[in-house]
Length: 292
Ligand code: PDD
Image (cartoon, rainbow, N blue to C red; front, side, top):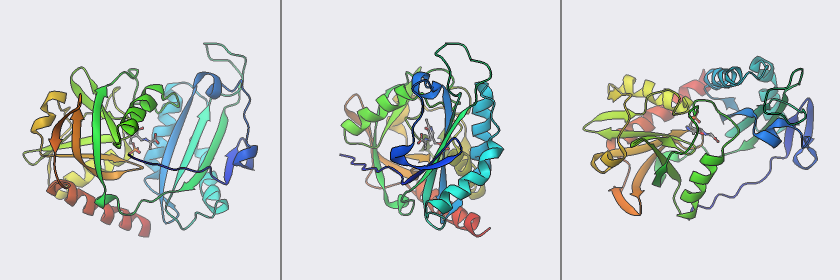
């Protein structure tokens, strides 16, 4: 069983105020609370330094623009560092959660006018070291999400349902299958290796453009690996040589078991050779970024 114990952060930033988690409140008419009408980001922080910040911020701004929430993410930049400092995480490994909702207004399905977006952010410690020795099991289920998975919406009902099923079955992730092809995980991107070629689903409306995914694609190029942005069929997973997940919370985690409808279609003892080389390259890349 995957037991993930989480605690509340000591401090949160909410609409201009720094508050303890138990005194930070929003109106029940906040459209994030009532309609899931908001966009979020999760940014990894290595030794107090936000990683791939530009990529995260660009994706955040793109998401806000896509749903016409009028907010400039540039305004957040100083707050992220202040949050790390105030949370005593300015030399630790951590993550920053940040969300912007459309704001507080009487409930309507259309966008209300003249509403100020609500901003929430907080930082919390996470263990980023040692990902290369983790081995994950995954299950597969139908991708029932909407057709704009590229938007990092706070409405995550299909994702939480999928991940809860993985959790219930004692594995880390649920890979999602749409029209016979694997898109991504409930909260991670997924890569496959077959005959020394690395595959992942192309960008578009059916996956989140993962920031870690992008770094890993760059590393494939750097290492001279053959790489194809091409989706893998769900029924082809039994023929692949390696599977790994990427994401802010898992970095590059090897998958050693894939179960489809209760049948184990992929099984290995350990992460494969290309996965291991990418993990090492990722560790070096992060170290160089921290020192930059
Ligand atoms: N999840 N795909 C989905 C559906 C995700 O939610 C995430 C990230 C990823 C990986 O993206 P990145 O490499 O940019 O973290 C892929 C975050 C961490 C979350 O929801 O908590």
